[in-house]
Length: 408
Ligand code: AMP
Image (tube, rainbow, N blue to C red):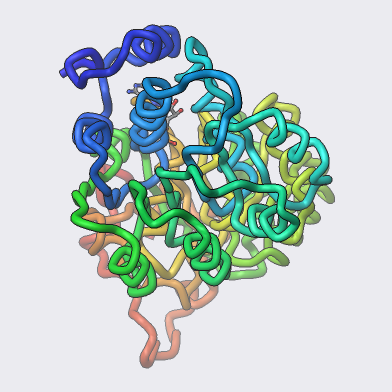
């Protein structure tokens, strides 16, 4: 199947060719025909699957075919949780629509609203927005909603996580009833299902996982380490020659700042992105990382979600996520486009159960790193206390998975 066979019009085909896309990804192949027919859609998919193009292409096509020029009332609204995602989505619309006479405007909070309002005043066929800023501008009467007939809720689970549910519901109440609705979410918690039930009508459900080959090309390993040794272990790993660019995940915002401080103390340039940083600081950190000015970016899951960084050599789980899907999502940030990548996890004693849960979810054992420069205290001692309710250390037979040697 190619893009032409999906019924995509020439100006978009030309742009896709210029982007170097030779064939649609599975989500694009499955979603585009339904979306071109005007159906509602639930897409269970995460970043890296090509979901942005899966909705951007049919939206551009639908609006482009009917566009008469002149005044441009907004026809499509894409709601997404973060500024970074909003900018990336805007860039995608602009790239795929570059041979069409359509305008995409991006609005998000944390920066002055004036340039965004000026852009809206010039006319915006498509608006990509974070919920808070959209509501702000709506309350000020700066946004017209009466012609919106396509709504996309992108990363719905993250929007709910970030407390945007009321904003999202308020926005939807102000939109015309008769519209096409698309909802994308990597996970399907109860609240998202609630949104699906109230918003989508007679919808198609499409579920895709990142291509297995992506995950298979990622080398995964675990360092079992006590908390006080994590900074030293990170420093040592970063100082080893082969770490071109590492995205380090921490559980909390404070944790992210702490890791950056520790790295800087060791003269390793690093920056953090998380929700307490201003939008500008986050964008600057991302740009410095993309341009390789800094090799280490430390992020929380929410801030990192959906950031499109190509050729990331390492993902480091400084803290193990307690939800296996989050692990899969994090490591999928490396090994993109069939390139190899390395995913390293630091596991404290208390986190061992999380490793088990992840192994169960991915159907694969996570091998222990070949060397453990800072082995766990508890494993050093012959008289280690019974772990009680905590999970016991993994049995010998499961450790040397994938041909890796083990010191113990
Ligand atoms: P997304 O899942 O939308 O964040 O897309 C992930 C990455 O895949 C982006 O860098 C896109 O530019 C790229 N991409 C999307 N669709 C295709 C395609 N059909 N062929 C090649 N690359 C694509």
